[in-house]
Image (cartoon, rainbow, N blue to C red; front, side, top):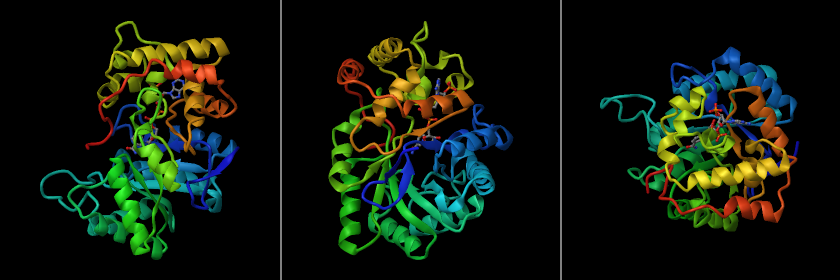
Length: 333
Ligand SMILES: NC(=O)c1ccc[n+]([C@@H]2O[C@H](COP(=O)([O-])OP(=O)(O)OC[C@H]3O[C@@H](n4cnc5c(N)ncnc54)[C@H](OP(=O)(O)O)[C@@H]3O)[C@@H](O)[C@H]2O)c1
């Protein structure tokens, strides 16, 4: 396994991260695997040298952190593992739980303690804001995150999906105040959504922030040919049928031209489409470790195999040519 430094930090992560949104409770999403079903994925990933596992407090409403923590504590070497989780989305429902989400000092401090309890670890290696919070002064958020680092509860901090200007402002404030600084950006970036190339990625390259993209295979859409009725929901899997976020992200007719390009390059190479889409992302500047979702072991094996695929300049050009600009997807501007 190849390990890379995450941005300008000293933290070394494997070239693939395992997305633990897929593991937790099927009561949360029908395609999510429970702990027994998830176990072989952790065994296989660790055997392959993967050391980077990404979850969030809200995945399966805390159960993903519990499953991830238990399996990694049992199967992994804690000192080598990079356990990442996130905070922001509501952990309580209803109008009487105003402090159960967001990036206030109160929610960050209590959210971190709750994540530590569920994960069963003494510190979170990478604590990420799941989105920016427009209602909370960013100084309050950044100081709370810095305090967690100083307290030893969090080793590094990262951000996920937002406007580049918010990220730039946050990096600048942390620097001016001498606070811990975001080392990573977990953004929505794949062959079907490349708007991040306009502002966020150049900013991250300039500032030494490592990219760890989410949904690198466009939630499965990049892994199979266009279905006959061109509806992402008809991809023939439990996730395709029930992942209600996917049709909102990938709804542009030109997306199917990109899928067709992946199909052509994959056929030319004699490789599955998933490996070609992932190899492209791995080749992009600043991308340290795409965070892949796997619900069959073959998904995981395919992701690992993609690490040894090097695309030619012509193949990359063919994959990129059909792309048309998209409205911002994955966060609210
Ligand atoms: N920060 C954020 O806001 C955010 C948002 C989303 C996700 N994430 C993180 O990113 C992780 C990954 O997200 P994701 O699951 O959406 O990523 P993804 O890798 O784009 O999609 C995974 C899906 O693609 C299909 N797939 C994967 N490998 C395949 C292969 N080799 N052949 C055929 N199909 C394959 C499977 O869908 P089928 O079952 O349909 O075949 C699988 O469930 C999450 O677990 C989470 O940690 C973060």
